Image (cartoon, rainbow, N blue to C red; front, side, top):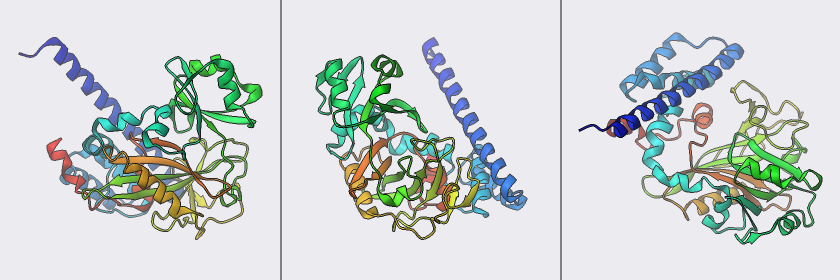
Length: 351
């Protein structure tokens, strides 16, 4: 017998799926419009291939919008692409399950991965203040710890997304009641970035986004890599305005193009005359070793996104780790397909 609570849950699930798909349709359409404004209309024959592939291979025409947008970005259609909504709706529940939620609290990551690579110096969680070892502190000791030898710190809330919820705070701006109202989050010391990144934009810290995957044989590899550069006048890379440059995940070599959020492109960084093409990130192998090694300490969530910084001493720092729907669309559209060995195109049959 169908109960009222089960009907209510089914209705809620249907609504959430509808909202999820509406969001992805809007995002794909927004990027497609920007790409076509810059490069011209997409070949109708390629669009037909996208629709055929979405229906025949992935099982639903609703996966076509991202495939069309990928095609507009790449200038051609490529079999094996994973649409972003297919990844979130079909793939991610299969490879991460509930384990990705374990990484939702930024304050716990340093303890979970057992590493000093996270620049955490404190946390605000569930009404209490903590030091970096998880010991509860009073307000005066907490403030002293944050600004002991520092003139600025960063506060990242658990709900931060695309840079929103990130706050750069100086001692004079420190307002604990305001921070507490922002929600749970982690306090981190401000990192002085390596000169390689500062030569492009010295005013904000560039972050390297690395995406790692535990494959079907249990091996951990980097499947996606790009740098997020801020703009002049910004103190961090804001999602609305930052420039991303794709990175070869095997060599750490930068691409020639810079991309805005909608994937419209330019040569290098718009605020800097120095080209990005063929430039290689220093200590890139250390970055890869760091994130793959840490991922193997928590392999149950098989897909993780890492924001990495190489500091002025050449040390690798982990700004955050994301076990949710982290970036796949840029990697697929601008470098992919990168998951052709995984067999994900058939997962929908058992979903």
